Image (cartoon, rainbow, N blue to C red):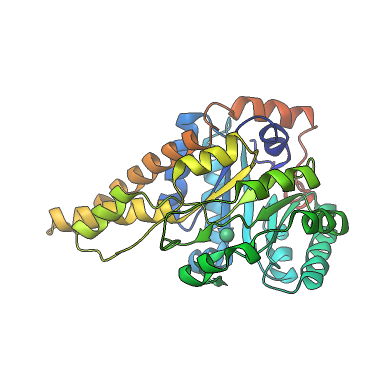
Length: 341
Ligand SMILES: [Zn+2]
């Protein structure tokens, strides 16, 4: 039952030329789609849950859906991660719920407050065997409660929002964080840019130098593929000017520059929405939810498989499990205590 922390994943991803996909889950179909795709591609994965998802689905339901996924795929390395945690209380709730990894996002606070909050979360999570991701620098776009900046404003001033590599070294030293989300010009949501995206790859390179051994994470990395926007618009949607990060740039950030984790949410939403819209438009008499949620789930499988190839993580499941066994199968204490391993 390889529910694990991200440690064995990042150990291999760090200089292995691949990144682990972190996919947001909100319900059964999305979870099944992601896990089916990773099983087909033999890829490690991170299932991530935001504060909004905990509220929407009720964490008790999500927990059992994820448990079922883990049980159903005993050969798949899976980590459960809190996406954009904002308070110590939320982190504590996730520890109790058996998460293996948490993010605390103090990036919108002044630097010293970000250091203080992150260090406190590390002190709380590490004794439970849970790893911590933090964020430094500011991303554009809007994601649930995470308010970034509008595309125009972000693009105009992007230099001053990017992660400062020497500050990252200071941040790492003072917080003891396990991985770091950096701002390199990516943006949350489906309306990331007015012009073509250009990632600041130099910031990844420099941060890898000032923080050797620290796994780096990319948020706001959906590509918003044109063909899905076109489908949505064709079948009655209205998403003009949606634009994301081209997949070849993410592939380069992973394979050439060493990013270890890439968050993907928007593209799964687009795939699901496009398919459901298509069913509604082409079969207007359809009213059985299984007949639109089912095809929606298939669309998620297709999108996730495409992402796993972009991240070069297909086929890496077995090596990650071997690394996990080599590390002595470390699992969060709370999870082990609950007798669920
Ligand atoms: Zn994010």
